[in-house]
Image (cartoon, rainbow, N blue to C red; front, side, top):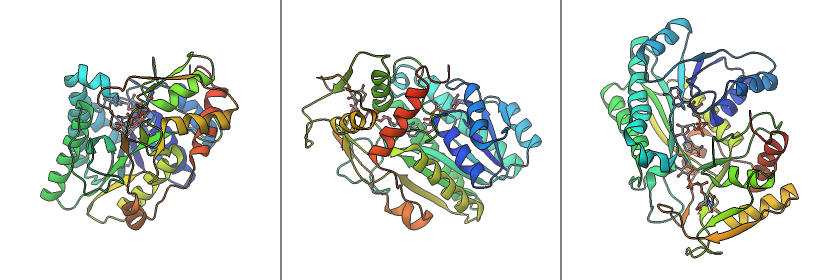
Length: 336
Ligand code: NAD
Ligand code: WQD
């Protein structure tokens, strides 16, 4: 059985759907601090049966020890954590507590239960302002915010653990910019409050929840002046987790670090254009000042994941826009 911490969240639900369809048994664990139980009902509708979900906090050894005692867990995908960059700068202790202390508690519980296979949700944000694109895994790690530093700290803890206890199989997956939704439109991204990220903001403009998109910066050294990112379809990302899990379940007793991205960059205006095409909706937008902390361009070198995991992203920006719109159009208020 595979434990998905943070399994009720955006990437967790999509990964659960892919893993169950691939024949894995899964158990989800979540404190619903950034997700809703309604998402679990939707997951059930997709896969045609209930999936066990335990409500608990990844910082609680009591919750975790009970979970490992109750279920025959063979490997863990560790999604649980907080992910809003701006909020992390304002609330560093809360971020380090959830992301770092939570990971430490989980690893302690895994050690007690003798479960030594883990796939960890890292982030391209740990590269910070990279010297060049595409970014390989060997690039310097210099995160520019608390959130990114919390992810790097957990990576460091896992590297130290592996050096001390080589029986562990550990995959560090550095996601670029996950967007889109399951093609059935039953699950998707459902941010609380005003979305921080581009795609959910665009879909909320399209559905009439927000009047216009502010494009943060039109004077970057990029082809059209707007920021360039490596958007990756969440279903491709979910399949990347399946590949990493299959790798970990073979017990390689290695630590593998892999970018999950497409290797292609798209600008904000390109994404808006692709979305307008896919949805048939005009997205009113206006170029405003740059957002503090943003880099001009960031895209992955995804070749290592192809070579080591046999995984490559296959879905296009048009697919991402079509599926993001299908989700938002069918669920204007998300899971609410
Ligand atoms: P999400 O917020 O939708 O999912 C995270 C889940 O973890 C939520 O359901 C939340 O309730 C749960 N959670 C948070 N703290 C917890 C705790 N202490 N105990 C138990 N559950 C807790 O976010 P997501 O987009 O699905 O991201 C999943 C993981 O991937 C996160 O670790 C995130 O940092 C990482 N990541 C996300 C992105 C992205 O852009 N979405 C990019 C790179 C990395
Ligand atoms: C994308 C582009 C913005 C909103 C963040 C995290 C990163 C990772 C993914 C977790 C940029 C522009 C955005 C808007 C805009 N998450 N934009 N108007 O900043 O690349 O990455 O999410 O690990 O850690 O930092 O993603 O979607 O916020 O921005 O113009 O209203 O869209 O300036 O160029 P980002 P994003």
